[in-house]
Length: 448
RNA sequence: GUGGUAGUAGCUCAGUUGGUUAGAGCGUUGGAUUGUGGCUCCGAAGGUCGGGGGUUCGAGUCCCCUCUAUCACCCCA
Image (cartoon, rainbow, N blue to C red):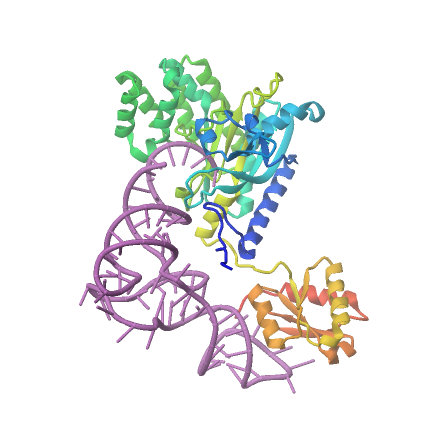
């Protein structure tokens, strides 16, 4: 019989332990940060009725969505992000939940786009959102959570780029350009990449007159520290109510971040950030890595005025952002920041003497009872081979005991990195044994 | 979806103007070594040369298609 070639779909991946361990660690970090700020977990189905998912992001998102007809003839879609399912969820349950409602949601999403470095067809997002309030406090909190997330994850060179859609719409209104907003925003977004000249050309083809083009270019040319950018925006948007509101909010956010002790290097106002997703109406965020900007944004989001408007008459404004777990992981890997741990356990117990299995399990359960993790090797192979296995998996210590030690109620605790070992009693003195084990584990993990 | 580049062992790669049984290092595995691992030495396994078709006496090598990866456009985590 012909064998089926084992392979995964384009853009879909397997995760080996060495990849999965840091992945789980990242999810745990995100969870802790979210909870620290009072966000609570939810989950929603992978599949939704297609009508719930389509037309909520943009045409592009609809095009990239996986969808099919199920066996009951229903048009079904796989979620494209976690925000649209949240909108449906909120419309359905907000009465029991009450507002403001702060939730986090860590789950995979699917997009049928061309895979590239840091871009996959199946990837995990770690979303957090606050809905039911328009207060600036939530905007500030969102920025602070992003800042804290990045540090906790172990990235200390990054920049949160902040903008406000209101500033952009204010400008569009002033120039009487509401009609060509997408073209203008897209051109603006490209400013850094293609330069002023190219942007001007593009704007001209989009039907803008010279005056309008110059105004847009003036906006995108704004650079500098937050105070500087804000005062330049002030001048540019005199007389625009929308624009002034947007500026005030940016000012409040930056002021609060400063007060919260966030250093300037970690955030900046960037008027070129527009964000493609159509539902954003206020503040928007993008976070890029200082050491790998090319991989794109690893954490972005923004404020939306009426998230659930398609599902309920209740007005539900909100703000949130999403940490791109898989993209961040791909970046960390490229930067060599992923430690190579292939073991989940701390303590290795070689099966030295096959006749003493019960002793090994007794030993292991003492270790586990103390909250440490222990693995008993499944076969009575040669000790050297067992230790090699332990070494390759990154175990910190081994508990070695043959019949002689076991008869005496003793065990040898060996630090596998430093090779230091000591013989202690474990049967009669479990507490002392555990103390020695802990001190042996905390020895410096360095090879001299 | 459109275009550029690439694909040889699990990994990193070599392979002459097309020429006979396709190689190396690392890794895996067995041994040297019946109670102590990272070194050393010896042995072994592992390849439809991404897949399909074509040109040729002969294709890993040239041509076409396709799949996958990667880059750019687009969009985005």
